[in-house]
Image (cartoon, rainbow, N blue to C red):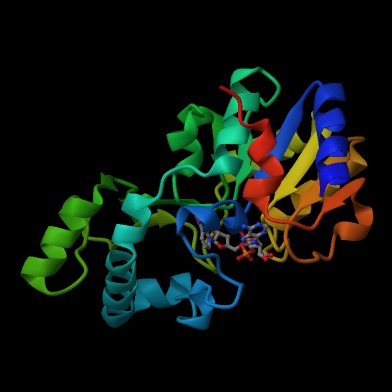
Length: 248
Ligand code: NAD
């Protein structure tokens, strides 16, 4: 590990513009489980695809029950060492923005400005109407759910209200995809952290950066399909790997 961290330190020092790309693995030490590890969320529940959510009140009720069941976990989670290390490099001016697949709001909580967090899969700490995009807070959804015993619809347009996340089958956010592509193509160091790199199109950004000339680092405790393309692979715990880069 020492040599990997030393090498990473050199690459960070040599880089002018670093773009991190994060997945669920950066948040596991905060208590939020990832999807694919043993004990991860998928060993408990299959995800509800977007068309099912739209078509069925039962699916919406189930989706919200699951979300409320996770609320204590999300509410209690504080940024981990990985988040804090990235926030230090952001404050130092080395990182213009972070591209994330995470929906937990922990990059913002660690000190990134909202417009410096490119959320490819949205955010689960609030909700939106899927018709008119009006924002709702989770407390509102919860109290409506409790009083009506079903998932509420938008008070303005009547369409369903959903966590502000991107479900399978739902369109990717255009603005975020464009910004992520620009960031990937204009950095000299791209660091993929805690992602199994199997969810597309998000998983395309590391190779986009590589093709545009950036060095690619992959930090993940299990192998990924893109390891062969990386300039440095650190197959180890993220908190331990990035802990030394947490600033004061
Ligand atoms: P993933 O679950 O597919 O992959 C996470 C990877 O991180 C795995 O390869 C796992 O081995 C590794 N990992 C876990 N803990 C680690 C640690 N401490 N150190 C090093 N590696 C560790 O997650 P993904 O690639 O982000 O894609 C799944 C989707 O899940 C994303 O689209 C995201 O929207 C969603 N998701 C988000 C959260 C969150 O916001 N925290 C949590 C679960 C799922």
